[in-house]
Length: 258
Image (tube, rainbow, N blue to C red):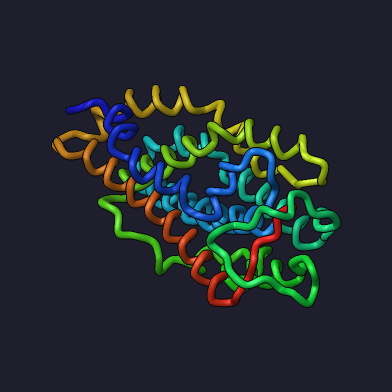
């Protein structure tokens, strides 16, 4: 059996790169710019992802008690509470829209400006995010279940989901510091919660490596199945990003740079 985490790193790299280059996640390539609408979209997409993965992990935990220890490492309640708090703050307060920085920057995925307002209207941004993903404060965990792929098994899906979840947490502290350093008041509870998750990365790998021989009994393809399910989770995130992009384009919405 090949090493699981070596296989995951190598065989998910293409999807990992594709995700980073998919709008709205691609906003993080611009270190000194903040885009309120895209940031809202990132949070809304990640909420969908975290709700879906938390559900998958809970299902697997119910059928395989050995997964309880690693399931606790993602701290799904804390993360989902934090992301909802940020979304509600952005939805309720428009103070971060009060000034425009570097007006020459426009996201190249978007098209027509709202010339009647000079800058792009806050209510237009907010309504677009809601239209793409439902009400931002919604607790509906099945809003985008139609985009979820078919996984090999609850166990392989859960391990893969936690891998993607904790892997995404590794840069959370950097993003949080960058956002906090900007002039606007930007809610970062989500990235702070994910920074806490990142502390479990080493323990997660050690725990999975210890469990792997027992979980993979009589299944020589177990590692390959986890890798396939990890790629499926990455592809799910990419689809959510592309769905937002398509919806925003169809509504002629332009991203506002702050």
